[in-house]
Length: 280
Image 1 (cartoon, rainbow, N blue to C red):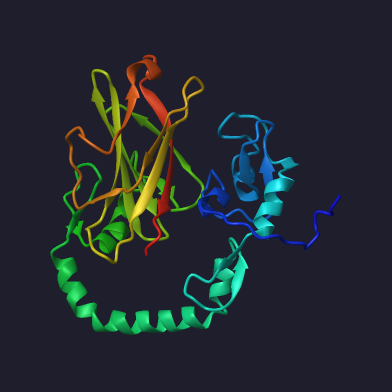
Image 2: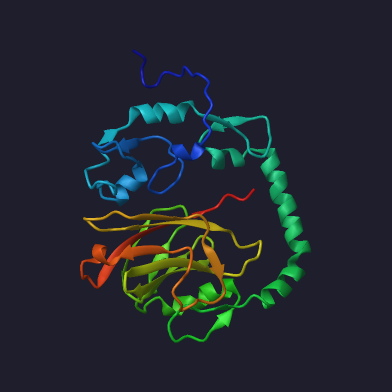
């Protein structure tokens, strides 16, 4: 029987590295991986934020380690994505970036390029004004100024939610024909969750208030219901970027919450998780 700290490694090929991410926050799993009695995994950070309650089955989580998965994580070695000769453990990319000479040269070239194209981007921003998603607000401006402007609305109903892309999922409470605005502080963007009431259910959609320009990152989103009777997940591969919200019921890229799930309730909760898409 091998000791859990045995450094013996063997080679294998893993085609989907995302299988090594925490299924809750989608960050790379490292050490101290926990599981509930049903086998659902969670990283140590999510366990504390969830107050040791599994979001999939509500059983306790955070007490039993998943030693097998920890061994898998320790054994996975990945090459530098920028092409240097060094390899590192999966999930340790940020630590590698600090000592990688190729990363340093890329950052320098990026800085020099930013100075060169600054004038053309200012012209691009001038024709990419975005409208404030707050109710009864006529403000419009560049998306980065819009984020600062929206701080004046955070005390209003549905405007005080915060969100971190790739971080802990946010639970929001909505009613039919309402919307909530979520502040993503890391990238300085606004995400809006809208609900549209129809006879057969409630349509739920999410948009990012930003122009379709290269400097604005793209995001994916997972929305799931927070109901004891029903667990309905919805994956949005790419969050649509819009400069102004539409008040019409969406025809695509929406989640439908059927009437029978609501059971006459006026309000319901959704768990929202936004993740930044990797840029090639």
